[in-house]
Length: 130
Image (cartoon, rainbow, N blue to C red):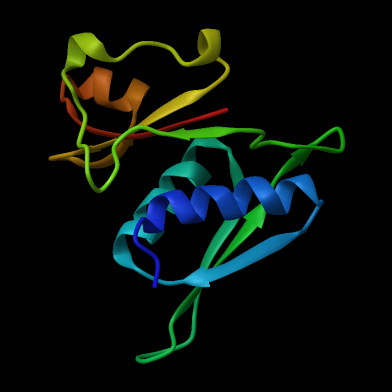
């Protein structure tokens, strides 16, 4: 049983990139799929697909490499099950001098920090990725 599904997904993406895997397969959930879709839109993963039906639903994430190096080299979980962290619009800052991204869960859905700033909406800070 996984207590933190987002943290587990990030760890699997980092570890798979470190050993040069082409893709990973995870159990499907709406939250994981929304986070993976936001990573796809931001250019951190190559492809996100759903597999299976009803009982056994899986999600496949294709990893992205640039010049032989994985696109995702690190990630830091901000909100956890025991500690929630919320950011207002003014709290959203660049990650790693613009080379990373902040992911937020907002009333408008799962958004990157830049998208949340454009929409002038804050929310729960999920993680930073670079």
